[in-house]
Structures are given as structure tokens and as C-alpha cells.
Length: 395
Image (cartoon, rainbow, N blue to C red; front, side, top):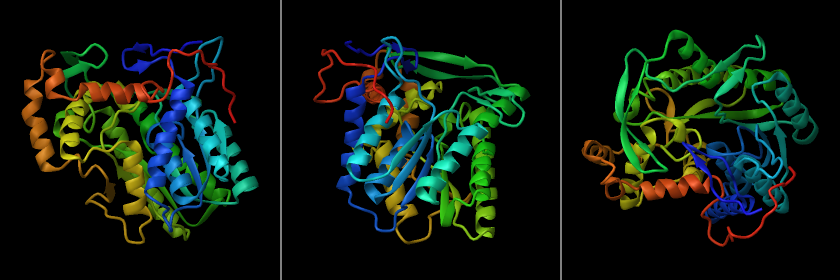
């Protein structure tokens, strides 16, 4: 079949297998161009490994550190002529490249929140790796079935305490409008924290500790975002921000637990605002990202997921020196985004944005390009008019 992008709201419902493979190869080539990290991890578990920062972590570990990896994800294969999810195609392309390079790469597709997937992961580590020295926790999910209670928790993206009104953009149509979002109730706050907070990360590390599959000095990292004041009502101070606060709570608890047992550290890396499947769903944020991209590209400081994670590994995690923590003991690789000169420009541009001047005051074109690349579209060298088989079995 000929696969074209079909965008509905903030998601593309199609993905191109050859395009996704080309996107993976771009990231692999970037990591290889930076050379090997001598002190990098060698056996890595990535929970949430098929897209975004988790995928970039797996690529960086494999091709920047010569690590063997086990990836956990929840992706849908193709069905009845319908393409698979991009994470499905990403994983196949990554796995083929990793194995061609002589590296171990195993995949487990299923609900990472479940006890069963944790058990499968531990069995795979014991059988194939023995122990892992890095655990990356990078899950992004709209819902979680709690493994102990069976309750289904659904996250929401809402302000807390008061109604929020601000500008947003339909990234597909290029229409700037005003959005008003009612505040979350206590149940919605609790549900969002259950899905996106730190409890499952703690459950993973506890299970790995109990099974004795963490190597001496093992590190675990999870990713977060803070952003500028213009997004705080819907992000930092909203339901998702409160969930991220719980993630930070978990990091401190896990750090103390790991060190008490003679292991390494647990910490949060605060990353830059980027076009990901998760960020695309958050009102207001895509408009901010479009402004940010224009400003950072003009300064030569723009980074994508793979540049962010390669820098995290190379300059913070595995450069032989102590981590550069902020006052809340978080590593900050959003440093270039949060530079005062960049944020002052954002503040100047934000109130000026209209549908008419959107193309000139922002990099909405760059946003759309990055958005479609996530689904395998717009990659050079790919014939998007050619017939392609959507069914690609997992390897």
C-alpha cells in the first residue's frame, strides 16, 4: 500500500516503516559521529523504549557506549492493511541495526505497568545479561491499570486551582486561538499522579533489587520537564506538574535506597521542550515550542531528542565527574532553552502571535516537519509514492 500521513488533531494515525527506519538511522549516525563514551553503561534496561527520549537513550547506549539493551514498550502491530504505530517500526529498525553492529537487543511488547512484564524483563535479564548497570524510565501513557488494585487510572492535562485561558495553536491547520481549560478535581489530580508519577518507577527498581539483577554501581534516570512561566499553569503547576513532583519524590527515595544497598544513584534529568507524541497533546505547549525552535535555531543552540540524550550521557552521566545538580538535585539539560536571552524573547513574541503572523514569528514549519518525522514522513531518500508492505514482524 501507499502510506500517506493522516493527521487527526495532535496525532498522526499512520506511520511509514521505511521512513521510521531512515529516522532511526539519522539518530544512529549522529551518535556515531560523537565517538564512543569510554565510561558508558554496558547492559541497559529502557522502560519506554520505542519513541522520544527513551528511544534516544537506547540508541545512545548502543551506538555511543557499545551497550546491550533490553527495551520495554507497548506498541501496536499492523492490522488489516493498517500501518503499525511508529514505535513498532522504530523498534524493528533499531533492533536490526543494533544486531548488525554485534550488540544484543531484545524487546518486550506489553504493559510496563503490569507485574507480568516486570517478571518477563527480569527473566530476560537473568537469562541473557545477568545484571544491568543502567535503568532508564521513560514511560508516557494516558492510562495505567494498577497492578495491585486493578483500578484503571486515566491522566488528564488540566490546571489546578483555577480556570486557565491562554493561546494555543492547531499545528495542522496553523490556526491560533484561545483555549480555556477548567481546573482538575482531586480525583483527576490523583489519577494523573498514579499514571505519570513515580510509583511505577519505584516498583520497577524494587523488583529489580529483589531479583538481584542490578549491577554494582547501577544508575537509574527518569526524564522530566519544567519549562517557562508561560506554560506553568498547564504544565508545571497543573496535573502533569504535580505528577512530575511525585516523580522527583521517587527519585530521592530511590537514590537513598540504592546507595543504602551499595548501588549507584537515581536522579531526574530535566530535558528541553521538544516535539514528541507526549508534548503534542498538551495545549499551549506546541505554540511555545514553535517560538522556541525559531529562537534556538537562530542562535545555533537547537537540539532534538538524540542530541539531548547524547549530551546527557557524554557531559553528565558518564564523563567521570560528579553530576551537575540544581538546587532540587535535578540534572538540567534544558539549560540552553532556559537561557535568559531566549526566554526574554519568548515573552516578547508570545502576546504578538496571531494566525496571520504565525509563519513569520514562529517556526511552525519546523514543528510540523519534526512532528511528521516521528511517524516516518518527510525523510530524504524515501519514495513516499511507492507501494510498501505495512506488516513488518517484530524481531
